[in-house]
Image: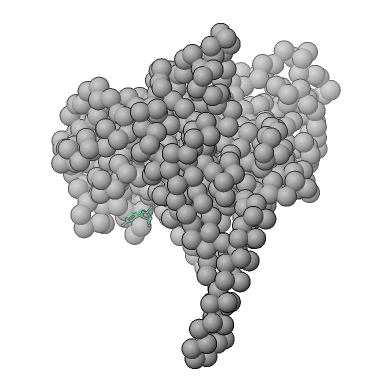
Length: 602
Ligand code: GTP
């Protein structure tokens, strides 16, 4: 295989700007997928991706395209656009030499356009800009092209105008990829090495590593060593993504493909590790080969606990969580035991969507019955006795009388919005405790607003509120800013007069009453009604602050009675009331995880 005919590239953009649709056109053009089998967003194969209409995982695919009397191998990786999955994007970027940067002609440059562009620049990739959705009636192609040219400091002529939907200029774009993206570099002779940029678990064949061969040739039955984990194994199968796994004889320098490792313990094969092929029994240590750069695992910013509904399924949940962690190391977990719930897992996520997707995967892909705890940000607490604690669960929050000082994480927020929505967006500042820092003109009609806010408030559905107040035009990105002192306390929620640890929340002292009232009202709205009425109370340190009642589902016990037998009717209703009281006393309701999720969204 001649390396000069290989092009490895990604498609990056803000969410929904058309990456997967563009990938569809490439798959058609290169006849990778026969027309009869083609369906929209073909690479988004996970059922959750199809349900949500978003890309969650990166998707590699190998295509072959004839150009100027040569046959080019084009290895494409489609990436997600949502900020919660930017770790996926950064891993994909480390496996390629170029990136198509797509901008939706009706929305223009948005926050993740810039964030993903910065990631691609850091990797030193060739950037191929394109304005997409030019077929849309309300698109502003020329204006957005000027803005993109300004951002990239290039000429407007260097930006292609395309429609991923109807295929306009898509073939030209593919040709520009061949011309502008450099072929893989051929490094100095360090032995056969490949970077693991993703992986998945196959219950029969163990871990399948997605690799970018940096140097050499990997073949079936080669013996390898993982340089970080120091584990050894044998290549069971090797091949390409088309986009399903297609076995081949070998993978050589610069290629993207997969290696079936046969390893059964997901922990042994880490994303970012280096597969080193032991040649002629020469050990890696003797050659003193260093592992490839790998990836810095991102710090998880929100935490929740996941417990089995039936304790007997603990082992199944553990297995599922380990598997999910294998292909998504940004999701962290450790075992924990909680007094009122039992044994489960404390898990860390990059954001609320990340949390939701992991839950859905556990429920739908693994068919597990789980209980979850309302997610929270971490807190740093200094106790009166001088001890310091890092808390990442509302349940563990100490009583106010023990606390000397509390600090919470703040984020630096960058909002990009058309100027017309500035005043509407300002209305969100007070309820979300946002500190305005500065604003500057961005492009021709937009503003970039810099501000700071407690991360605790950001996860209260701020992004959706920002979207709806700006009719979808404002976008945001955020980054950790600093730790700041705050006056916070734990608000307990009681269901049927019993503390429900999955619903506790850390709130500001000054807002306790408002929070208590609003929370019980919200829970009342979303709690599934039972055969008896369910009191919902908010309390601090045993003192009830607010209360609502979820009314009982009423079964019409008198339905079978004709006419007006009033005494009998009354008697039956009385009997029903007694029955319900008994039921309520006996019941221990486990709060469905949907309630926890809906509570975050309301
Ligand atoms: P994420 O991976 O979730 O970030 O989304 P994406 O960037 O892959 O976007 P996707 O391809 O899923 O497209 C989002 C929406 O835009 C879909 O409804 C597409 O049909 C639509 N779309 C994509 N390209 C075009 C285009 O060129 N013209 C029009 N009119 N619609 C498009």
